[in-house]
Length: 312
Length: 259
Image (cartoon, rainbow over all chains, first blue to last red):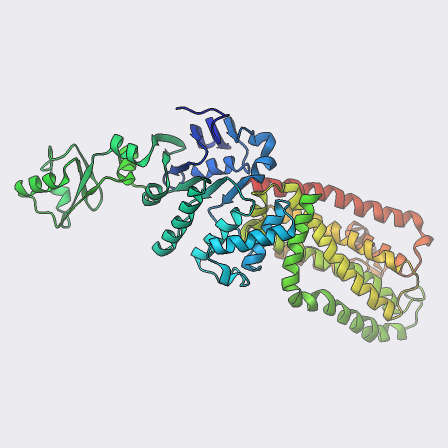
């Protein structure tokens, strides 16, 4: 893996976080280059949030090396945080204050003059499409609006590195797409995005490069395309059988595909030509209730690497 | 200092939006209480002769004690719900910690804000004492910082405790077995000499008694009569504030780091 404390925005070697006898992050190595969108993909409890909190300098590193912009979180926490934008997993907005007050007060934490906070707040309200709600209290806003406000707030110090911990968890599809659009614009402006997610579509949409985390370790690293090429086939054929049928298949699918995964409700057959697999299954006299041929996704990569689904 | 003042600024903006709803509990209610007890009940107490209270009317006796006790009650409230809210409900303290602010900025900023709130309440209450003619000395002005010091001797340790809690369930214990008995038995409403002999040393353990006795000495101008005791009151209260302020910083830091 290339990268050094000088060339990387974030540089981690053997990074470890322990809580008592529990190891949340177990010796991970990664580098984030300036301007890229980098993702941590993994199920809940994989160690993503603990890693993010160490990068954000709010949780001390137990062991290993971590530098952010060449600085050490152990000694330079406030200096690193001053140039960081953080979107935490849970909203931390002051719900009794207005949308605008939340932005202005947050700017004050960074020592910005009041007038400058106001000017930046106006600009960010536009970016987050919240200008019309600026004088409303935060509490009645929708989940999507609160997330957009949290992102706007994280940008008040004009950071070139934005940490997003599960930015769209719990949002409806429309709100997610709006958020992705805003994040994409930030990326185009050159802001480095580091995000965690357990949604493979989010990782595919946003990330130039990602690491797959499972049980406190990094199990694979690459671009979404590279990971799919390396750990899956081009296409997947999903066969869904009637109740009880799948259990009695007894090897009837053997040899149809490069690899076969039996899930609770369906069978996944991995092959480069999914259509041919479907035809071959019919020729063997199998009658699945539904047949779906699709391209491989990161979900398939994860299943291959860990034997489990991402969202359980 | 700069970071701390940002936290105070945040609390002040919050207060500006919500102060209307707290005007009654903070300012009007204590004044009504003083008037009803001091003038209403006091009429009966005073009818039995003024020898029991060392020549004072009941209003004169009660007013300084109630000043310190009112500030204590406000301290207990400010040190519980806003702290647990900032750490667990709205999580605004975590938002602050994601910026250059340090845990000690967040802890001390909140304590300073509580002191400001108490000074506001003590000032209004002191003005009422003066208007009712119950102040005997210009030292009444010093009753305000002493009442704040008394309040901080509660606010700081309770804040340290609140920082360790994730739900408000145990706050009832503080109010029921701490604040309410101290409010009643710390020499606010009657001299602790009226308590049974065995209970008197317990009153000495009450931070509120130290505050009440000292505030009374200042408002009535009798502080010079027992200088050693007055100095001891200040020492006790300052010691509690110093130790528990340190504890507050540690507890808030621990809680913020845990996430």
